[in-house]
Length: 249
Image (cartoon, rainbow, N blue to C red; front, side, top):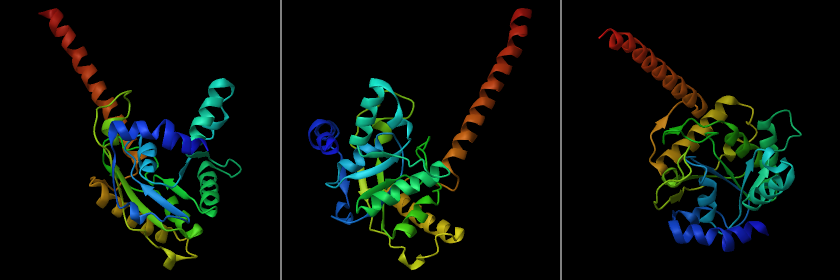
């Protein structure tokens, strides 16, 4: 109930009025039955704008901590995230990935739409990174079609590391459903999982227009941080070397 209140009364109308998001290919999303919405991930605002363009509920998995924080703040946090279409990762499994899979399978088993970001984390530079194979495994185990989608402009509205962005009109594009039933029973074949994932990422790239990098986003972020640290160290060394010269002069 809270989900629909936020979407149609409290939050959704404000986002539509202010940002006027555009959507293409909405007809590719089935009106009923399970489907996996595999999207690029430019901003924390993606999970607000993409579901806003559909009449159906879209559910994502989120860290369990968002639902278990104690106190009044935790209560409001839990209500907001659950109301906004997120469910906690099932922690009964051996790890977070297995828990996320269980939560996703439950959602799809109930005939709902499940949203997933195959990159696993937000892109730090606007490029599209290599997808993790969990989306492929989920598609094979659930039998649900995968609908590639791209959200463009959210990194301008809500850029990473900043409280406020600048105004732009976000665009959401949905591609044709991808059917991987021909690979049924092969969810443990890592080559098949990689092939399926790459096909999904290609469609997302085509829809988003992003430059594709065949590297995991987490690794790319580590390399970027290391490069920044090296640049800072070199700058500090250069400034330190200049100090004696200035004193001597």
